[in-house]
Image 1 (cartoon, helix red, strand yellow):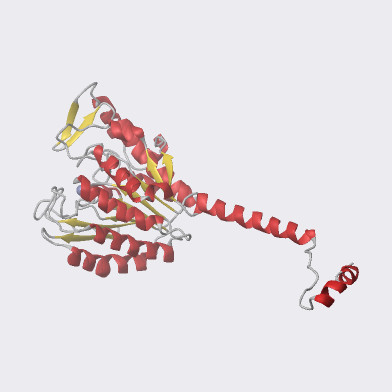
Image 2 (cartoon, rainbow, N blue to C red):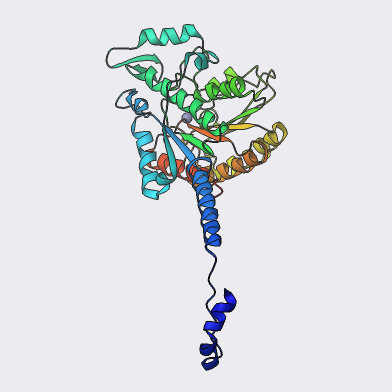
Amino acid sequence: MIFHEAAQYAHVQAAFPETRPMYRKPPIILAQLLQQYRYWRGKILRLLDIKGRTAWLYSPDCQTHFAGSLHPESPERTEAIEQALRRSGLWLLLQKIEAPDVTEVQLARVHTRRYLNDLESRLPAQGQVQINDDTFLSRHTLQAARKAAGAAVKAVDMVMRKQAKNAFCAVRPPGHHAHADKASGFCFINNVAVAAMHLIAEYRLERVAILDFDVHHGDGTQDIFADDPRVMLLSSFEYPLYPFAEGELPAAAGRNPHIVNTPLKAGDGSQAFRDAVRNRWLPALEAFRPQFILLSAGFDAHKDDELAHLRLTEDDFEWLTKKIMLLANRYAKGRIVSVLEGGYHLPSLAASAKAHIGCLVKASPFF
Ligand SMILES: [Zn+2]
């Protein structure tokens, strides 16, 4: 065939010695290339769609909890974060997942039935009922809290099943001041505690770390895991400040050796915060080798937040997130679920959460 074509072109070659007969690719190679292209394209798209993306867990029900028009824990908080993400373009890169209700079994691992029944019985038909100093129940509060905890559980399920690389739960009411049998500090159900117990019960994990960088101490979480060494709690907070006045900070009782409190004082900023993380948190995490990292992500340690007196900036939240991600990659297969706690100055909450979520998104191997 080739010899025959070459013979046809012999007179052309004689006139133009540089000219060669055109080489025709056998059709079979084209088909193979097309097949290869389709295979790799499908593989990359599947990875981009599922494994490589950060999940954003939300629920319209979370916006129905209303603690009063002057209360700082307002529905505008999660809306401000969403707006900042939309403006930055990060919004397009998130998988948006609507949270399910937490189940009774999942709740019972952390809270007493008596406490939950008591909350249920006190729900008002309208307005608010004061539970304690600054914690108010409204008609839809429990439904919102059930979705907030359901979001945390769904997020850990997605990350464990490799349906998401990591996740942020944009939920309210917050959870870290909720004890097994007591609501306090705007909190009713302890979302990260429910998620940690779900990891232990459903996935048989033996070492789960909760990192709480809200400006207030995670007293509910500490109380729940005071006797459970499967859970590490690292808590950075301003002291004295709610929930502990001067002299009230309880020493870690020693029953769970993995509770590490790093109090900061009013006026402390980046340097003190980063020193505490470098000198206390990171060595503790290296020794514990967590299989999963949950974040109690409060952004009220920001310098513009009026509920406290620390002086962090969004750069500090970004720095911390990067440090945590390095550790998560080393010990926990990159598994991180972040659950919103405090943060009440809307512009700084939005900027800080955006910096934090931006790091989580960039954990994808495609960035
Ligand atoms: Zn707080």
